[in-house]
Image 1: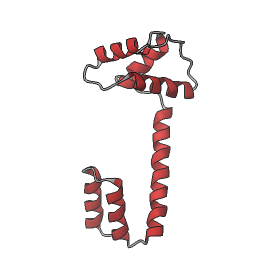
Image 2: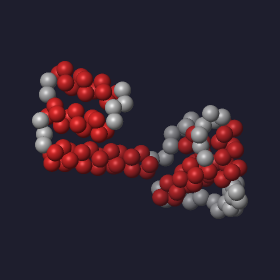
Image 3: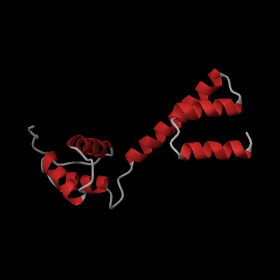
Image 4: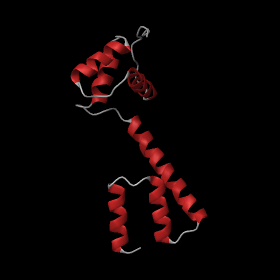
Length: 123
């Protein structure tokens, strides 16, 4: 693979090339057969899954929607709908939902954090 190939590949990744298209391009550039391509694809998938798991295991940094939501979930026993209203007041353009808040709470519990009991939200 020459420098021009690497540049074109990097450019494609930065411009949102889909994984399948990127994989096909790599296979062509490297002259791989299908079995080698699948092996590389599996390795990349494992690496990406590990990075996503690491990101979930870390508490959120200050100033993010996640950090604000986690603080609210940790410090109050308010219903999810009430916490959602606070998040949307703080971040009016966010797409956060009650499901997002429940996911945050689940991730916090997996990290070993204790959360207050909250009443059920009735639809």
